[in-house]
Image (cartoon, rainbow, N blue to C red; front, side, top):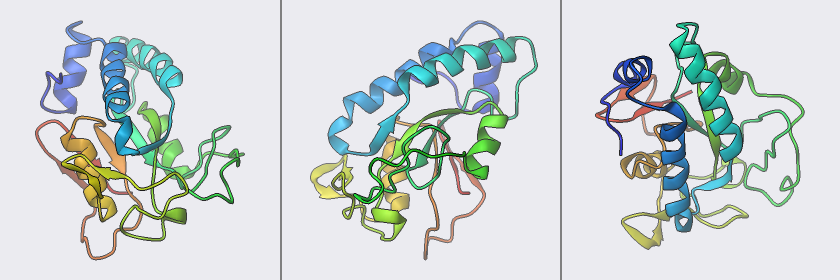
Length: 191
């Protein structure tokens, strides 16, 4: 369960020793596992995320942390992370290992965000229904027999179900969303 309302409160709880960032990340890893049937993630970086949580927690305690320290982030599987698979949810790239990290992702990492995994999407992010992926469609948590429709809806469902705290969709036609939108216990960042 989340016991903070925003990022500032979360940081303060870590500084005060009231919240373990490792336990917080483990909570999200468990939520992803509990919702595996939704097919929302192509990859989960559980071990790396837990290790990074320990490193970032120490930075927070020493007050040497970045602006996004402790935020748990999932990136769409069209953004490269060095030495990780970047499949673009396509059969063509299902075994492609990235040789670099995308600038957008590197900026998140540089500010001590914790990348928890890569989310499923339409092949090469060219679609709006999340049903055209080599890994199968992303399911709607409210009705597992239905897809989630637009990418923003997929993210909203993941966020609503506390599966992730932050995500970055790619181009969202007709959505009109940009920048940051904060709600009670999640932040959506549009990059």
